[in-house]
Length: 175
Image (cartoon, rainbow, N blue to C red; front, top):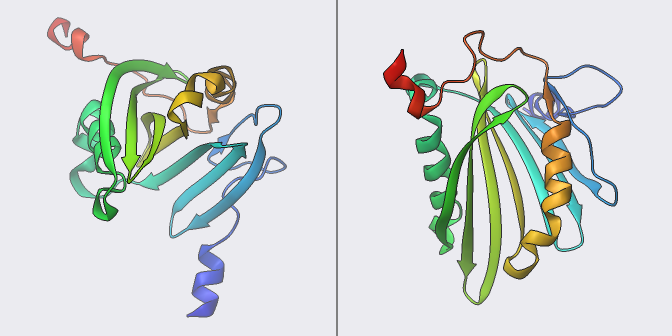
């Protein structure tokens, strides 16, 4: 069993060798966590009181057919709910991320007296859902916007985007 766990915990991202994605760590940020566990890859970078996490996990069953905005909204609102975290979504937008459709959700979280802000981006690669989150204290979230942009602009997936291009909800009536 221990051998199985060790095999399942190989590093998720290594800039020296090809993997499922490549990313640019903004200046001043440091790698805090980097692991692979049973097909899910997670990378976390931090700077001061803020963090950016990227998690790529396999899609199971019918999850791949659910609309991205639904997946993003549910993920944003359910985070930490079991332990009493209250979540609110302030804004939701469709964006392009490395040539593929993505849904960005911005909101607030409260747990007891602590409040934080977050921006979550959800996209898909073949067979996987990718969730990227910036979180920081509510008043400091805007201060990290430039670094968030650097991170998103530098993120590249090894798999090609959908050959038909991104399909946004407003475009569906035209097809």
